[in-house]
Image (cartoon, rainbow, N blue to C red; front, side):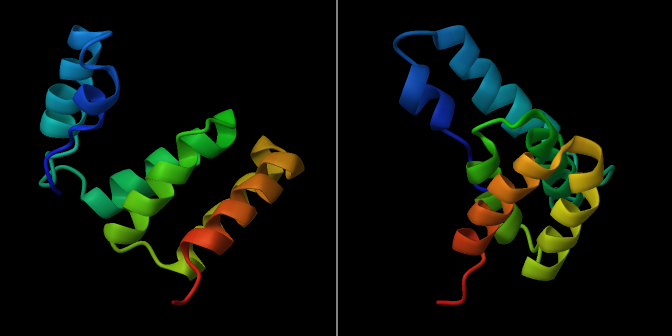
Length: 105
């Protein structure tokens, strides 16, 4: 996974410690622990959590999931499964994102 700079890019001047924690700890140390859990699996878990929360970060993490090898079919299954636990409207919203992100180009 490439070095994450979103924290510093978006919040570095405003909230430098948060930006550091985001880039260096969350994405630098936690996401890099691939011997314990692959980046692909972490992406599936993260997308699941963000979908259930209705969090706007779902879009960015779906893109990361695709880069980490999650297939369209797997994302569709993830959303379908979670629809019954998190709610139909959140699933519809997630499908709209997935259609765009996993569209064949």
